[in-house]
Image (cartoon, rainbow, N blue to C red):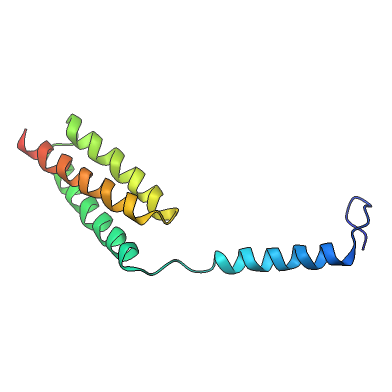
Length: 104
């Protein structure tokens, strides 16, 4: 088989490459649906609502609010990479900072 750059690849390499591409595509088609994944998603939604409420109440300039916003952004990244325990832990920490931001 001729590659785009004029290289010759044995048929087994083409088959292996195709199989690898199919495997990677299949792995990326769906998200993991576990209790931790659902908890991470739900906790993120609740925490972002709390953060928005704190912002609406005028607490967005506080250090604690900023820490919470940063932790929630990091938790969202953890969610995208399917590191759900890390996501949950960051959301819990963020919610503490949100409460602290309101208490002054």
